[in-house]
Length: 140
Image (cartoon, rainbow, N blue to C red; front, side):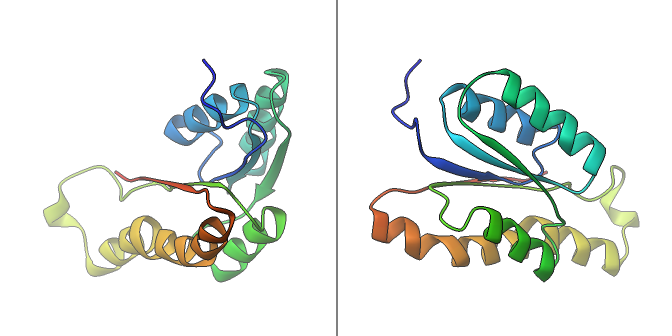
């Protein structure tokens, strides 16, 4: 299927497995240049190799934590002008939400709301200026 996005640049957070890897795979098959971000270097490199094997757009891997200022800076240094931003991070631990303490809730909000907001703020003006942009937010 041709979605008309070949040659676009995508920044995919949490891209080494699960929904993030699924998004990155679909984008790579559409010949999008993918910047794949994850915290686990080994899984990240394995995922990047799998994407490269698809033969689509270019793939670069950035080992970074989306919840840290330094991690977001590293991601944006590698892909300063994404046309497509996929915000994706792990959610709170499985279980009964009534047992979560304040720190667990704050970590979940930081990973799944505040960090994506920071990435959107950092990328949306460029998307507007280029006349093209897509932002996908995945949360659990």
